[in-house]
Length: 89
Image 1 (cartoon, one colour):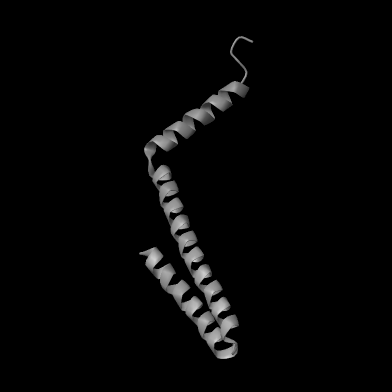
Image 2 (tube, helix red, strand yellow):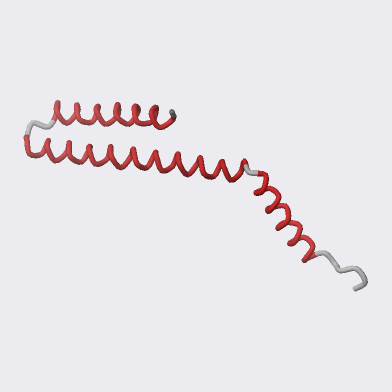
């Protein structure tokens, strides 16, 4: 759902860029080059948003797993115990 919203926003912005090129750039070859660049930007940005969203979902899955908190707590306790003075010493 988020990616659909993001892709709609990306398409709106990129369409505005193409309209600006169409309006202000009167040389056909230059306009073609600029529009090709806008198309490349669109493709890259959509992939970046999708990858970012997938990464966020993966991180959230790890943070939502009770095993993560159990492992992190055990690791912290091990580190604390290392620095605490040993009994009888």
